[in-house]
Length: 115
Length: 116
Image (cartoon, rainbow over all chains, first blue to last red; front, side):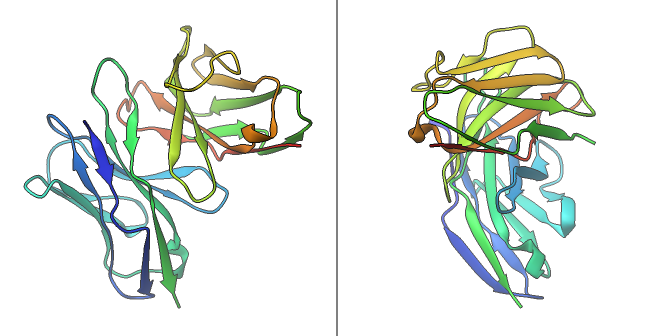
């Protein structure tokens, strides 16, 4: 079965420090991987995706993610965290079973960046 | 680009009434739209997938007669919660996927439904 795991419910980092939000996946075939961010009481904002090509994907707001096929991971990173990065982050993978186009979602990781 | 709006952003209704939520893709044509439900501090739960001009495909456990979805045009989908009850109170979010970028869903800001 296809799945996404975000092993950390919460990540705390100090402002200015690098941050990593972890995501691992299990799919058959080549994965289409996504990161979204959700601010309180808001919808989700697309950050970046990996479909094919370079394993290091750069996205919005200075975020990037590295696709690692051998470790089946797609961790989200940022070199220097901002307090405004504090939000809920979701990793997702495309479900290609049948004819549907839906995403399989991780449970989310709450990122808190402390001043 | 890729902006999705939802209306209303917040609605409070009495038990037994019906509520309609609109989802519009403002700057792209959404061939596929998705409706999600999210409980506090939890992940997204996909309710249904709709394609323009077709009947929606509901996820297992989602009552299609209770959550009516209409995708009448490439820029508009509606979710109607019929005979709402307090347990239907939740945060409802829609997303659209367009012709030019069929791998990415773009989300609306969500609708907070409270049923008294």
